[in-house]
Image 1 (spheres, rainbow, N blue to C red):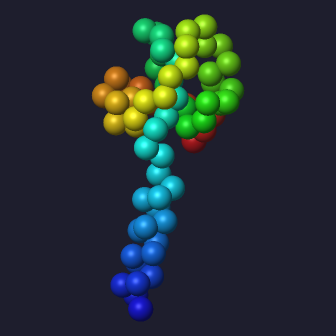
Image 2: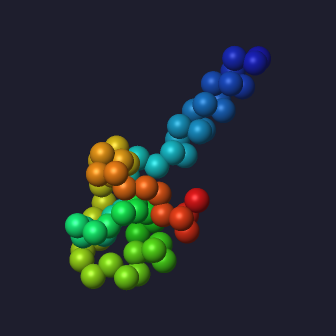
Image 3: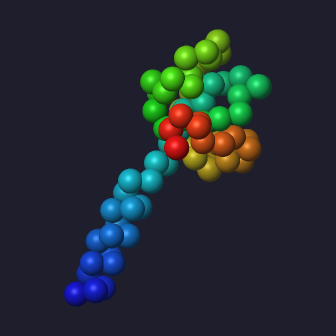
Length: 68
């Protein structure tokens, strides 16, 4: 029973973790965003693009403080 419960919990956590995020395609961007309509993207004067979380982290971007 414990193994089943642990498996279900781990599956739900993995399913909730985002795999893609949104960034402002600007050389000065420092954050990534979980949703395209995040308030942190309002001032983006470049295009907003969707990339993988791994790619965002490779660019040294951090999660938007409004979405923590």
